Image 1: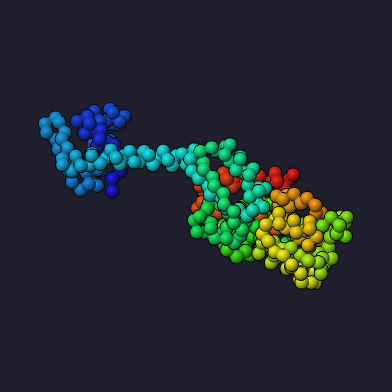
Image 2 (image 1 turned 90 degrees about the vertical axis):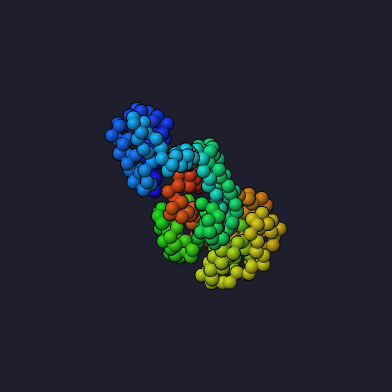
Length: 321
């Protein structure tokens, strides 16, 4: 209803007692002050000033508006400062959700870089596997979710592009729950086979997936487990899954004890150095695409955009080492 510029003029007129004095104080012309006061009275639908000789007096409505104008203008100034701080990354927050192997490899470097560049931005981290991490993003529990998906067969040579997902994963495959999200590809994570040191494949330069038929298998998270079963099916066998755990150190311990073999993403192997076991490249090559997801509106928030850039840079560093 009221324009902040008009309220400033009203306060100046009330404080100085004239249009000309208010104009000098505000750096305006007297006609401009007069026009703004007319506009304010039209918005208020009642006179705010009365002229008594050469003096101006506030009406009761004018006095009421002047009383409120101070707090209104102070609130606007505080809001402008807060928004400016957020836009300039002097303040704000980014809540990040990541799957565990991403939290221990990509995320630390990204958080350190973000804190060094923008110490006023508050950043938090919570672990969650997809699809739960994506649900948290949609439910407003975070601003960025690190997630992954396994491309469908036949997409190994396709390069990801940054775009709104619109139902597509990093390699263009449909991914349930990603429709309408902004997707930032981070890296391609190859799957590796872990075997005990005395396993026949330990000395080989690679292992064919079909060679693991009949071997006891230690499986990982539900999404990884589902993908492993599908890979084995395509290789012509059903895997014998004796153990399943989301705990990567437990997977390594079980393999080291000779209780089976495992297929893990490269980030998981990097996060938990596999002492006492041997890592062997898997054929045919299998991989997962690691991405950062956010909502379209959030992607325009400076702190979120800066965090996405730091995640992409940290992912490049991770893949290069």
